[in-house]
Length: 298
Image 1: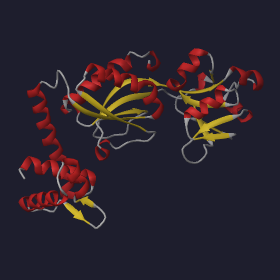
Image 2 (image 1 turned 120 degrees about the vertical axis):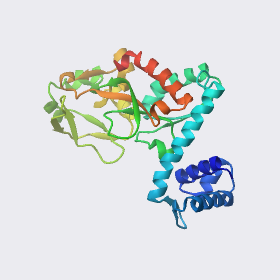
Image 3 (image 1 turned 90 degrees about the vertical axis):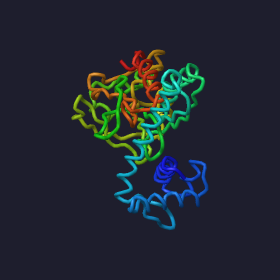
Image 4 (image 1 turned 60 degrees about the vertical axis):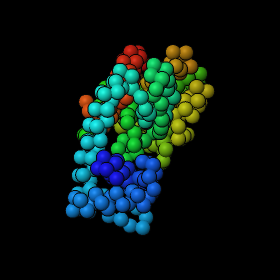
């Protein structure tokens, strides 16, 4: 096994936390992967993994070596892309993750247009309402809504959305319209939570106006909450892009707009920054241009 293949095996085993999983990822048998890692550790004179019967974990030295190995492989990939002209016509698979509704409404149209423009590309998409670890879970790009914590990731801002309170005209005809957040105590509220019921909504640019609420109904998806709101049963909170078609059609109306929290930025996040491989750079440029042109995010 040459040094380049050994690096690929090492990275695959580290990401899978398994010799079997890592070997499968690079098309080798588990014994071959094990021999390659053993030889690498012998050459370095350092233990890269601690092994148990259930999983394989990186040592501190192994963690540092993993970052260097990824950088070497990324540099090689960039060189290969340049040599093959991949910057002009990217090839391969791009792995993308994004929130459920954002993916359905806005990522899929952009992504399918990208695949039409670059027929040698394929894509794998995970739509999920949680923060996905790009490195550990093997994704190239993520859509993130909200302020970004400090990290080693690169981010391209493509717009913003607002958190809005909305209801159907039929609801307001029956129950009236709230004039301040405190009025919500007298309204039917539908909250969205994957876990425990929500008992507080925050308003104001600094989110300094917390309001205790009593949700008559708690659901685990925004689609369900909006369906209930459209039927005139109650009020719910959503992100502005999630309700833009309903606002345009008049099925829903926003209230308490003067009490809305600060806008939430939307970013395309990736790992390698300017060192990103051609397919990632090309997709980010393609997606950023189209998302920024969407008036829903301006």
